[in-house]
Image (cartoon, rainbow, N blue to C red; front, top):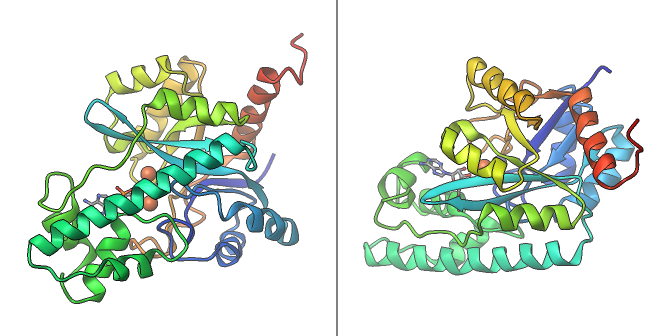
Length: 282
Ligand code: AMP
Ligand code: FE
Ligand code: FE
Ligand code: ZN
């Protein structure tokens, strides 16, 4: 089975720079044959992606990125293959997005207290129709000339422990996994190399995670192969991709470089088939 699958991409429905169709065109040019769009708390790109994917000859798998916590750690989960019309899932995503707006407002208030005259409207303008996040606030600060760079915005104000930091509304992994499974999908721990230690990984396994994102730009080759080994030892699936944000995070040239095989995608579908009783075990 030849082909490259990149299952971690963002559009303007979260903090990516590209609209859905542009992202698909870029994916095709980069030689990807299967993709998943995994916007934070948003599935708004999925319908158009399915239609355009058919036209362009790219397979599009439903995806989403959710924020959870284990103790003090931020743990991102990726959900795949769920029913994008699942009412419970859609209602939860809408709630998460509303909570993001409230949090962005609190961050702007803190920035204003720090004598940075950022208007909330400038943040909303950055987010457009997408779920609002700190990247939009960072961009707004740069646009308004209140910080010298995106990175500085995080270092000085928005990063964890910095003076304008506000916690995000997050659910425990168990709830996120149930939400995705309830909609017929699979859950993976995203970019575990970023902050997920072994104990947290074990916790996630106990809570019913289906797999690990082994391939990610933040992982060294050694980390990727170590996560693949852990997955194989623990009967977990593997996913991966570029976490492409459309050039917004100095990532303009990464499409096509971070991918998993179509066999690995097939393994996900076989697991779902077994779970949903679509296959009889020999
Ligand atoms: P949010 O979901 O609003 O908490 O924003 C999280 C996003 O902000 C992450 O996905 C990163 O893209 C970005 N981010 C978080 N921390 C940093 C940092 N220290 N420097 C640059 N970007 C960051
Ligand atoms: Fe992001
Ligand atoms: Fe993430
Ligand atoms: Zn992501």
